[in-house]
Image (cartoon, rainbow over all chains, first blue to last red; front, side):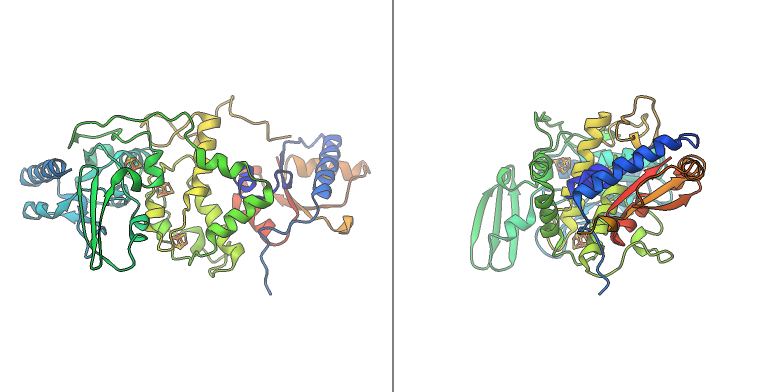
Length: 53
Length: 315
Length: 66
Ligand code: SF4
Ligand code: SF4
Ligand code: SF4
């Protein structure tokens, strides 16, 4: 999924997958931080957004 | 080619005569030159209608589902791989179909030939590698090699992978060092340039769904584009909707597409929708060593779990 | 752009990551407020359509977690 989106020009860092057990609150927080930093670096997404106007 | 069609007609005649099959699915001449179309034949007198030449670019595997009784089908290399895919996906039973395999010499790119003429083409003939095409204003003699479809140029499985009988001598297969040059070319661009490439590619799409209908993989009773509750994708030509359609169509073909080119062949706007599917074909090959439709006994990679599946995309 | 306006649509499995998110909340851990959580009954409920829908509706990123 990520590969084809990337091929179409959607940046790889806009799509994330992870595996966190319900006991891993620390990992959860770390992953949120990591993703958030990566996405902030990219800025807002303008591609593939439907314009309803 | 001529001997090959004689052979096909003969086989079809015998099969219908001995009542071994109820119907034969093949190609017949269309109403205009180069427009061969699929045909189903039930009587042996009609076998004369069968043709086979390098304009038979559609995929006959698309017409073998939900047939009653035993049927025979004419299959090029890629058609046969889609038949294998059908068998794996339980769409047909192997013993219900009789496969007349045709070692394939490649199909031609009709749009490229039409572009040479300003008026309508009135006559098309082929003899080995020479194509003779005529309109009311001029006559061109072309070399078939120069006018092959892109997918046929890159095809590495021209001989049918399963068949009950072959209607010609096997052809030599090519082995390519770089099987996906087109995908690599797009991958070399940066993200924004890739986005623009796909925007340009699909900008003329009229959402006619000919590409979907021509594809033997697209047999869902209700396609996601027709679903209305929830509606995943709008029906118009809004560019986000067009992108979503193409993305998901390709995604549904992941690990199943044989690059037969029927989708491109059917597109009235000459959109090379293979730019989407080829990427997934390459991934299936790189990640799982998989090419669709080569082996009846193997489960496709997206349908089977193996402990050594690549998983480094998961954190 | 405004950094506070990032939207990461997060599909979290009820039993795993959603539980982890719950635990993080109960333990009063701090994390960026960029995620918008959608609880799914199991990661098996996930579909590529969800991801595309999220982008179509204006997500800046999508996160799927089992
Ligand atoms: S893809 Fe291969 S088998 Fe199919 S028509 Fe082209 S050359 Fe023939
Ligand atoms: S997506 Fe196109 S090339 Fe692939 S199997 Fe379908 S019709 Fe053939
Ligand atoms: S056949 Fe061509 S125009 Fe029609 S939906 Fe497919 S890509 Fe679009």
